[in-house]
Image 1: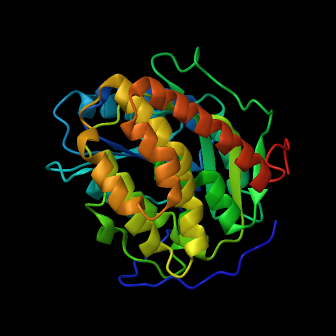
Image 2: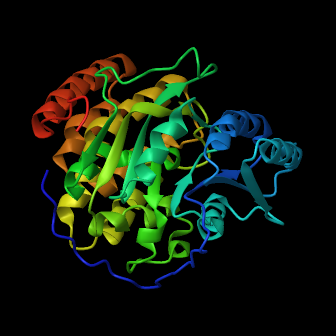
Length: 361
């Protein structure tokens, strides 16, 4: 696959975080708030895996939880230490908001690579072993996309592997990588960044994006502008928990905020912006909207989503063809429309990304 010519990023407030001489290879950074039970599950899954890789550290940032979170962290710090693994933690004196907590982890991380990971998701057994060899390769990647499977209660019983038997793909085209990942750039648990590489190039300070609900894009997308090579891990090393999305307006965050933030972070690269936003409108929104409508979830403010999405994507025919009908048709018809659109998407994906089905490159 061809390498696209990089375009220099625009730096408004360039941030440089020094890397200690004995820095860990990877920091797994976990923002948490009032999720003691799921955090304990994640740390229990991580403990035996991190013990195998002493060059990996875990960092937890507690956003002033008032539940059992501090006790959970203290208990697992003892367990990690006994296993020869590293678990660091920090606690804010007050709840500073999710974006600011994410940003604090970016600044506190010591690893050459950074994996911000949701406190309600899990790294499947053997998942870290899929990641580490790519981080130690001579031609280290700029980004790694760790694909995921969804679970509700039992991640082992609900485990899904790649149906095509693929392990990983190496991608040298920034546009191809963006088309494969698209909206999943926003899924913090699925993206590992070469933090050392990012700090060597001009980029906006992540703190400038606090309040967008998408601060994580500020340390991911700039790497597409100077892209060399990235990895897609196809065998779903991440288990994403279903049903925990709440507290934001779906149309606002993934409409106006996603469109404007992506454009801002990829200046002069409309092809990269389109590679992210077009699949979002064509495939992700219809599927997400069916889930939200079916569940009756009111915390995502579906009542205002139509207005917000039309404002952001009304000039894109894909919105009217794929998203608008699913949002406005009666639910039974909307389901049929979404399924038909998903078939079209799969066909187009196979045609426009030749070789994606190969087991390994």
